[in-house]
Length: 276
Ligand code: PLP
Image (spheres, rainbow, N blue to C red):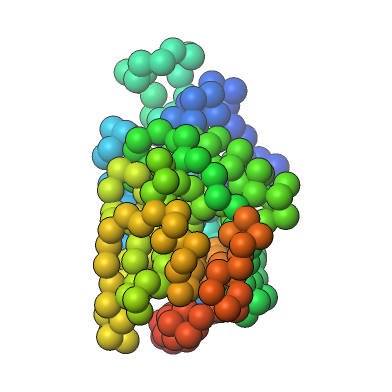
């Protein structure tokens, strides 16, 4: 089923207007929420971030978050989704084309489920990443529908035979193409601070909490490309990629070239969390 505002439609019935502002301007925000064993994972955190993104671009959702929460549970139940994701977006709605906010437009919320597997192979073997200049805008903290910078960077990585992009601004690592980046340096976990330059990933937030429980020191500070290449361990985190070790960056082998011990500890702890 596809949820469009408060309507339940089939895939064929759900249509996008040619003047929907999400379609024409990327004028909207989104979330990707994991479903493990039929349960929505970290739903409160995702809804909080959605609210924050909506406030940042001044879109009023079609109904309160409590109603959305109920609808999402219903969606997962209806689709009998065991393991996968819910994709959810809210656009500023439909109006005759013009850059300024339309007075009359009503926001449009769309949500649907997709069955996907956990990235078990990536988690055990590790992935390769490609470093690229972060040419995106300066509000990466908003989970905006405008993903062209990420799309182009990811495609560049794929064409180089890599699975993920690692962005840097003037030599300082920001985040991944669709993930956050962590390194282990002097047995401490280092990751870019939550700022306008990165999306504060829900998985990132979970990992910081898990590391604290495990007694692994966490430092939220920007680190350089040199730090990345010299790291004891590197991994990326996201709703879809979970905790995926990065074993090469632009064909340069990171440390032993295998998932590192702290990364594995965090993977194990993350596994416990999702099975709760
Ligand atoms: N950074 C970017 C640019 C992303 O697109 C994503 C996820 O899609 C993340 C970070 C990780 O966020 P989360 O852990 O909430 O999935």
